[in-house]
Amino acid sequence: MSQPIKSAVMIIGGGEDKVQDRKILRAFVENSGGASARIAIIPSASREPDIIGRIYHQIFTELRAEFVEVFDIRERLEQTPQEVEAQLDGITGIFMTGGDQLRLCALIAETPLAIAIRERTQKGKLVLAGTSAGAAVMGYHMIAGGGSGDSPNKEMVSMSIGLGIIPSIIVDQHFHNRNRMARLMTAIAAHPDRLGVGIDEDTVAIFEQDNIMRVMGRGTVTIVDPAEVSYSNQLWVSDTAPLTIHNLRVHILSAGSKYNLAKRSPLSPTI
Image (cartoon, rainbow, N blue to C red; front, side, top):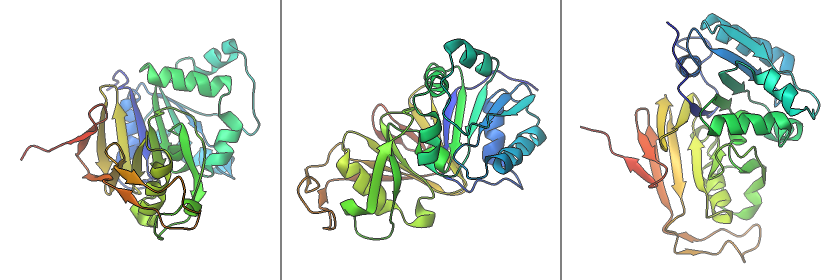
């Protein structure tokens, strides 16, 4: 049965199940309107956008979305507001694929299309999902690359500007799968006014209109909250020196868990 869209930003850690239950991708279609969903795929982060576009087109068609289209953007477009409105007319869900987040931002960031997507998403008129690179771009500050596994130090992460869909967060994907805790901590040390969100593979953090984030999938979402940090040496140590950070709060959330973004507090499950 068709249903109205349930506005949300769905940030997927990559590696989502595309073959079996497809739980996360199915939830995206359902949130976008179910049998009435009209979905646009943006595969621009990928080096092979035609191939990845066809893969997701087939998946969303098999999940019975009413309409599926690929926005195969390979050069930066300066469209008029009227052209953008026509392109997005009737679209209820947009899905950004994996690849290279710098490539994706180079092609669409701050174009009329990206601005319209951001505005529609923030007003609750659109469901926006991104996986892997498509997840990394969701914040204003974006992790562009870096290392993993070492102690937190400034050299292990490079930052850039994302799409600003949820400006208050910094996202890292493939999180525990690629041992990226230190990388996210390093990014948050440099931007202590933001909230770190690390998302495992086949896991999604769903940001809804009531300032509640909920978790779905087989892994966890890690929240790194610097709001109560009492000391950090980030400003003056060398790029390779280990960071010192005091009173950094960390929450680990598994499927069914919720987090209040306004209060910066996890919601304990009912026993």
